[in-house]
Image (cartoon, rainbow, N blue to C red; front, side, top):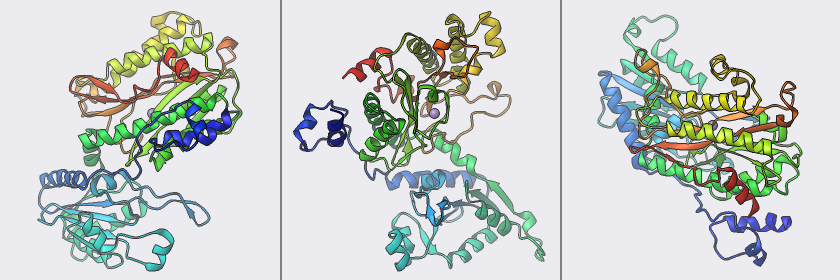
Amino acid sequence: MSAFRLVCLPALVLALSAPICTAALAAPAVTTTQSFHAARLPASFFAGNRARLLAELKKMGPGTIAIIKSMPEQNRNGDSHHMYRQDSDFYYLTGIEEAESVAILNADSDKPYTLLVRTRDARRERYDGARLGVEGAVKQGADQAESFPAAEKTLKEAISKAQRVVLISNFDEDFRKKALDLVYPFGSDNNHASYKKILVDGRNLVAEMRLIKQAAEIEMLQNAVDVTAAGHLAAMKASLTASNEGEVAAAFQGTTRRLGARFTGYDTIAGAGGNSCTLHYVTNDHAIEKNGVMLLDAGAEVGYYTADVTRTWPVSGKFSKEQKAIYELVLKAQNTAIDLVKAGRLHHEGFDAAMRVMSDGLIDLGILKGDKEALYKSGAYSRFTMHGISHWIGLDVHDAGGYQMEPGKRGGQRVLQAGMALTVEPGIYIPSDANDVDAKWRGIGVRIEDVVLITPEGNRNMSGKLPRSVEAIEAALAK
Ligand SMILES: [Mn+2]
């Protein structure tokens, strides 16, 4: 049976065309999720984002330009690079996926969008694929374009004419230094004009825009979540017969890749047994303990938007008494926190409520001993709960946007609004070496994580269809 599963599962997962082999029909159906290869938001989305940033630049006064830099290529080893993935801010404003690109937005111009790109190179393109070039840049929405090295002059002129340069460069340190040097030239400045210039870090402007998701983004995020859910279900089933964590990770990654996810939004965490207690466990290559839990924290990226979902289940198919007790406590904490994900609430309220539930619950289970009020106040639970339980999600798994507001406003905490998307992910981890805890609890790590969208009416658990209760998980494993 397991061999059939390996061979025929791909055919099932693909949005069923004709069955490829009859044995596939007998194998358990995993999902028939639609596929999203080459999914991409429309040009109007990127144009709209540029228009909103230009409106912000105009508010800053005349002579304001923004310069936005692409993600540099990253070496892996030798002359190999990591697969290229555009910087999220750059992508949000341009939709351009090419390296070595610079976008200039000039708030004073009626043709405000200039794109500087790599020059065409027939030989390089035979190796790496087609480049946009000037023509392609204009086709993708630029009002005008230049290619390097001639584009250097355009960049220098734009900066020299500007009064205020808003720089949006997250990861290109060399470019950041270059921009600083172009705004404030080092050495003799006989004009003594640069003192009038202002260089501004503009990343917060884009972050605030990205924090409130538009309808098209919500749809893309839902696609990523749906693909992720299919991957989790495939991984759950694979774990029943897998002997190594790598097989479980592979089931997730293979399924999501088949459904159109070019990337995962972060490295897959597939920890069996005691490895479930290591928060960022990504080696995923240890033997699976028969009676342990499996913790899978994995998210597919579709059209540049990533999901971030965690499920924990027993690889035996049935929770043990202790696994179930911890699981239900984490689930109660998660439900309590999800209920507080609503417009007008503070981002921090869910965390506080979840910690109270888990602190009290750990005492009820006898894992923590003492007075509930005193132990909550002392934060003794944090030894087992470890981490925060929520972050924004979107283009980045930990998406852009501050968690604090201006000092003085409601304790400085961010007030939740409709259109924000965030995770809710409490966990309890009793490591294998917690020798002061009864042995029956050791090696159990449970995290439950969902993607939640704040709506005008309340919230929507975007990953809620993936089994989450003890009963639903055991039923899914039994199928
Ligand atoms: Mn997360």
